[in-house]
Length: 507
Image (cartoon, rainbow, N blue to C red; front, side, top):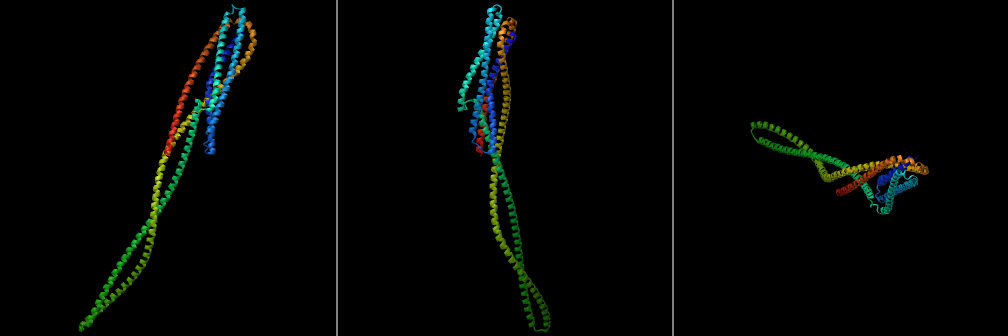
């Protein structure tokens, strides 16, 4: 029974040490849990915002209520953590009371045995004194930890009001607020990207309309060029007609000259005939008759030729007159049509050329703007992808941390169950202590073993303390990493502001 009692006492001491370690680790992990909860809430609220934006498309005045909700969620999470700390402190007080009660019972048993067996139980007293010292040290440690937890509790309660009024004073809240700001800026950049994409789509549609207008203008130009070529061909045909007219006029003049020559010859022949008739010699009359006959035949031939020429002249004059009338009509019509058409066409061509030049300039400007906008969009997409990768990494870390906290909460529940069972055992042990007083004589050999076990437990306690120091050092490194991340976040904010300025300047 003595062995079982001592084993139970040592196990209770070990459990108390483990609970202290768990509670200290829990205090340090509460901050991480708060930050994890805060990041989860931020992610959930961002998803809600996206859903609202998809439903309502444009809602920009929801930043203040979201901040109030975030602060309220932070305060609720901190209240829950404080309540858990209070429960853990109550458990510590119960354990301290149990250990103090057990130590008092052990000391009373020792005093009773000292009166009866003072020389025999000197060694036992030394072992029990060591047990008493260890339990007293444990109780002192628990009391100091309890006082420190109460002080922390009071400080946290005082800081609650301050944090409700000024949520940015705490560095954790600052980090979360800055992450929220970064997320809002990322959302704004996404909206800017969507607006730029809409502008690009509009500009592309304008380009398509401009291209269609250019095609129409080119078709009109081709039609105008065809009409111009047709007018040139008509002018060339008119020139040919004018050349034919001139040739016909030349032929008319040549025919008129021939007629004048034939009429002159006819007059000469008539004069010769009259001269021959006046001659008196008969011989000469016969020769003259012959000559007269020849001349008359020639005159008749000339007359026939003259008649033929007159007929041909009349026909050609009629043809020329009709041709002149038709050609003059066509020339006048063509001149009038050509003047109006050429003026209209020249005006249209000048207008079209001016419009084409304007459209080319606009197209070049739009093309340059599209290039710059595409470059900006690619840079923004790269930044958004990097931010998304960072968010995914943070989510993974949060999931891992949540899994760790879940396992720790399970261990804490198991330890609570064990503490309850130990409390029941301690109640049973109180009843057995009266019976154990009679069996203290056989504890000498067991005390030495217990001393060794106590030394081992002390070594374990020292190792646990070292582990606590290592955990504290790790927390310090984590805090330094958080500060470096804050600096990176500030740098990213500066880069985003610079990019916004560049976008505004480019626009």
